[in-house]
Length: 104
Image 1: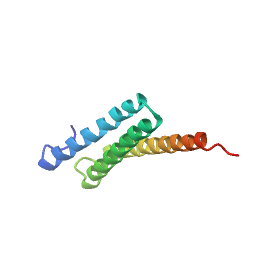
Image 2: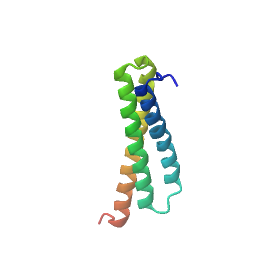
Image 3: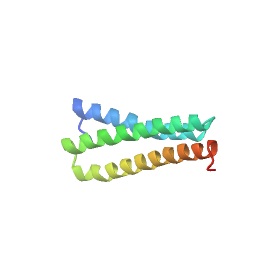
Image 4: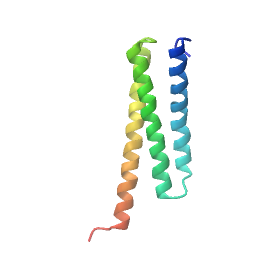
């Protein structure tokens, strides 16, 4: 709501709202996954949405549509969430391989 009501501000606000809320919704879907592959896929979609959110926040920050200081903590948070999801995907994939191919 802090973004300007200009065409660019409305566009960025809409994109940010969609990607930011989609990440959480896809994470919740992953929690109810029907298989390991489904879980990884849905976490992957959530991860992509956090990357999109980071992108839109970065554009807002660089364009200075609002004071950059107001966006910096959001950038850090979206980057942290992205790293957490990426690490979770990596861990699930690694654990899946270990179970299929146990060490000799």
